[in-house]
Image (tube, rainbow, N blue to C red; front, side, top):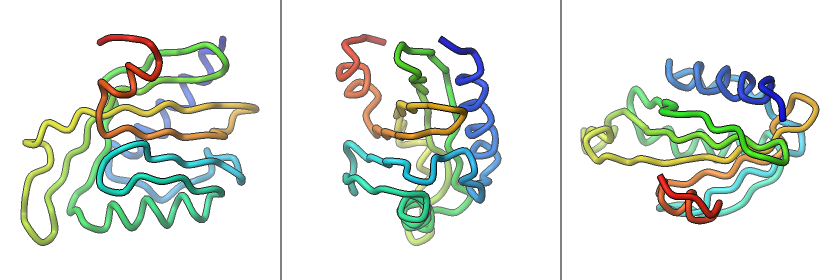
Length: 134
């Protein structure tokens, strides 16, 4: 296991916590990006497809941020991130932070690049998929 993997993930979430989603250099060129649940589940391959999908989701929010609550190093070069989203709906003005959306992500890392990013809107579902409880 490598603490370096956790540091890679921390750097991604540090940028996202500031609302900076501009870099995809951390991602393997052939990354698999998966959204397990929520309004737009699906699977996409490659940096371009991942960036377009993220942009389409984030464009509905003002001041969007994804912030990490906890990093948990897993076996097989994986890192679990318990996270939450903040921001306001562009049309509705709804404060997503008040919705208590506690999500999670599992990042698979090889050779200092994220090769698979699995996003969960429902943290409990992510933990169940891993056979864990919060």
